[in-house]
Length: 458
Image (cartoon, rainbow, N blue to C red; front, side, top):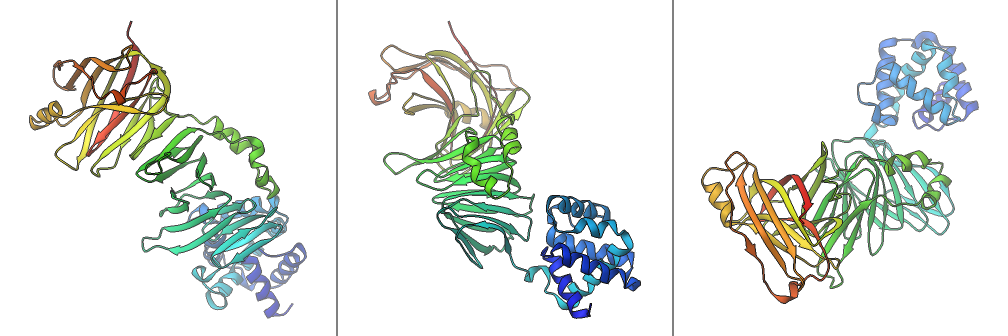
């Protein structure tokens, strides 16, 4: 075999495009030239290959880790790497050393390699340097240089933008349905689907485009934003971006993952197994605020919210310090009369008229909030800037109005001081005809809620 043919095979070896016959030809040619056996250069070469093809292993992977990955790939795809490995380290070192020379002198660097390549396609697929579009009864499996895997359902349009100055990337999902699996990354991959935006740092998820964009997270976490509402979506959860009927406001409806097994059949056509992945997502633990309030179901009206499990309770954080009311509604339990207890801690304040409190809503999602303002400011001016404790006993009266029988607010580190009870007899438009759900509101501040408990009052 002449040198030009060997270099050609080496080039295709890096691109993962060798047939079994060509792999054997390359193996025999390299075995006949032991002069390349240099273990140090083997390490350098393997690191170079790893960064191109196995970036999710890490930039300082050892020869053993690369060899294990090659072995796994050889077993999963019939591309002949198993035979190379069985020839032993000297042969591998010879191959790697040749690849060093090819990479350094004859082939383009990693930044010059194609951003993505088509692994598998079924039916008519249109591919350009910056987009992949599938037609009717067409499906496509795409692999990216950074280790990201993208699968496109039929009638799907994906556009890939250039990297931003900070290293992050933004893709546009114009139609259809996609599956994304990306390794942990230092800079976010953002996907725009209609008016929704999803930021990904390392996860597996499925996104559906349409009037109500949807993201289902199988593994990891995804930051979902829609209008003025944003929330961190955990594994095992589905978030739907839903506009209100008047079209002027939008909210995010988060629920336990609800993808049917047959809805992922298109991924199996692309040889992407989903049975175990879906089962793990459906059994993923979700943060429970309290047995009576299930935070797996949440409606984000505004603000940037995050719910994390903390022992048998949960921490609910509103992270936006932008001026305005930031609201979230939790769970499906309904109450006619109950005692709600929680504590909160303010982080940042964006306007003098700030407040924190609970909100109550009915089955139509109409709501009214009760926020602590004057008493809260008095405590903070007195130097109490830590956790504040709140107790509110509320009742929905037969005429539909809400009455707060008890409203207490005090610093956690200070003796409890009872505040006056407050009856709310507001505008009749706020009459609630059904039992009430619970939520929280932060006005002109970012805040964390904890130790949330609600129990019925007889």
